[in-house]
Length: 160
Image (cartoon, rainbow, N blue to C red; front, side):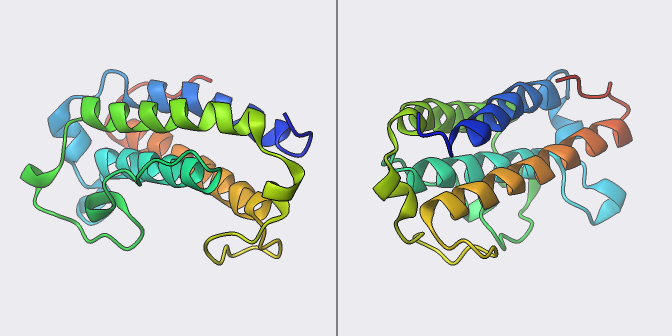
């Protein structure tokens, strides 16, 4: 593994445990509840995290599709609750992205990391590495939201 990827890989491994813990024990009806009536539901945030992880895998060259961009992509508007998959399906999308990303993290070469990112990340480093760092931070942000939403739903706190 390239030394510049190693810290990101460690954070991503921690996030994998936190993501699993965030979904644990949440009933489907609770997962669909929108925080404060207008905020994102736990299910939406989890789906968005799965979408983000799949995009990270794609940027790393894994060759997978983004997870449900119609429902969970950036700017996706809230849909009717019946349109959303269950937490098990979201977890499956997350797990697929995790499995696709792992071998790519181990294999990424310097030239691949320095290549221009396929989108304009909102950070100074516009390379693939910069985009991967941004998406890792983005994932952390949403895992924090999952922990907060769990507490508002009356669930236990996350433990990493």
